[in-house]
Image 1 (tube, rainbow, N blue to C red):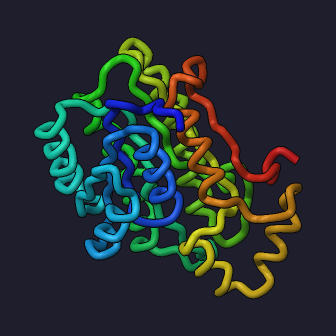
Image 2 (cartoon, rainbow, N blue to C red):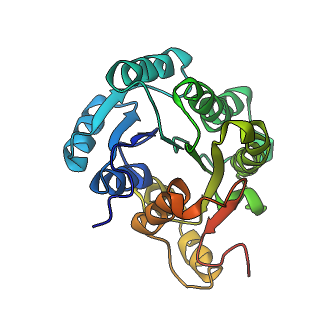
Image 3 (cartoon, one colour):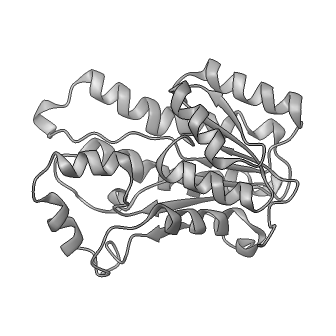
Length: 247
């Protein structure tokens, strides 16, 4: 087993389930000291046990600046540094344009944009040259998927942030990239697909590889972007979607 992240401190928001959890397990297996966040303490506790390798869970919501401050204060106390941030936490809601209300906008952008922005900003005092930031985007940011315009827009904005932050942080030697999965077999998407009869078949038919992705496939791509193997990759969006956007 490679130990690409030996003695590295890795922060993963939304790490108690789905892609975040599987990615945390990969980082830990490669030697990282992993910190994960999640809103629900019981699920967070289960995730820490599943990850092993001394992983630490810090309960919190990325939409809360106070919760993020508490996370980084803990890491400052424990290690005094952050080497990798995987800003993974996000929500998905389907809602036609005609029914979007202020609560929906506040909820979606509060997590997918505000939470992501401050997850990265508040990590910067602990990051040095050679640090890596991976943002959770989505293939939806490149497509006009019906009835989820706000979600699509939030993920398109993430792609833009990676570009801008690459310029903002170039003098500090911190790389920023976006991972953009397509439909991936997680508990979150399974609940969505099961509530939309026929949508899974439509989605799979639009994917050249003819299937949903697996969290493990996304996790391996995240580790690539976080490692020195991608040392000349910056400001990029890595689509891991079975060809959904490209074809």
